[in-house]
Image 1 (cartoon, rainbow, N blue to C red):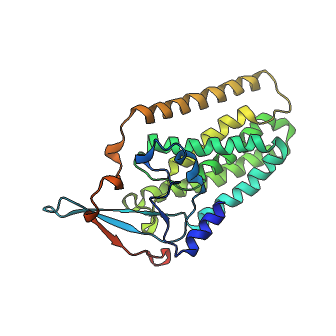
Image 2 (cartoon, rainbow, N blue to C red):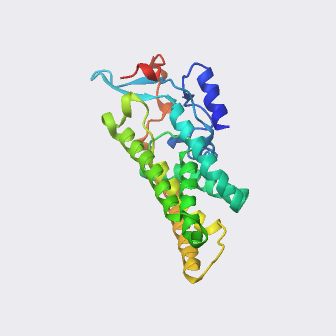
Image 3 (tube, helix red, strand yellow):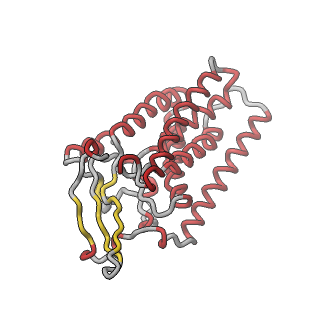
Amino acid sequence: MQVASFAYYYANGGEGVAIESIFIYRPDRKREIWRFFLYMLLHAGYGRIEVTLRLGSPLRKFIKFPIGLFDSWLHVAFNVVVQILVGLPLEMVHGSLRIAAIYMAGVLAGSLGTSVMDPGVYLVGASGGVYALLAAHLANVLLNYHHMHCGVVRLLGVFAIASADVGFAVYNRYAGGGDGVGGAPPVSFVAHLAGALAGLTIGLIVLKNFGQNLHEKLIWWVGLGVYMACTLFAILYNVFSDTSSRAVFLDDIPKDNFVFVEPVPLGSLS
């Protein structure tokens, strides 16, 4: 479905996902609970649309932000490859329901974590779920290390892949004043980290342990406690906190204040 979504928006001129989409996670629509999950389905094309908002005509102040959000084809390819190379082997060993639970826990953690640590950000993409799978592989190694071949090599491989992608996400998020590399919309690295934490903790809980002993039972309870504490805190934060001052809500802005800029292919952005 992610690839189909990307192909659809690419085929329609690469103008990105409209911010009015019912699937995008939006900080001003947090009461629409499905957005905390279904943003994972959106991987849009290669274009960008910006809107210029006039803030106080006497001072002629302007602010620009994207109303077409997108993931590049490279990011989509990375997500799909990880789901196949990491998720499929885990599914063959531990079963579909366990891996689906880990993936969805990562997706939810990605949106909840972003709402707490990076409020005001609009979110699309499956990185939360993908990093949950990567971290679940780490949990699998921790639980079944003595039953695996080359367990250390697997750990180093997962760490190298995750570190490279998170490092790029952090750089992309803050390079050029936070607009992303080359003017591209920034990547939310918070979703990566939150998804990884969820994948590790839920992985320790739901993955099969082929030789459980006392200290591994303790790990199970620690994983459950960490996940429940973080999730409960994020939910309560969203219920009781007011993050409206950090977000730009399009529904509250007079339409006369919008000036639209034509979509620009990524290849022409400097």
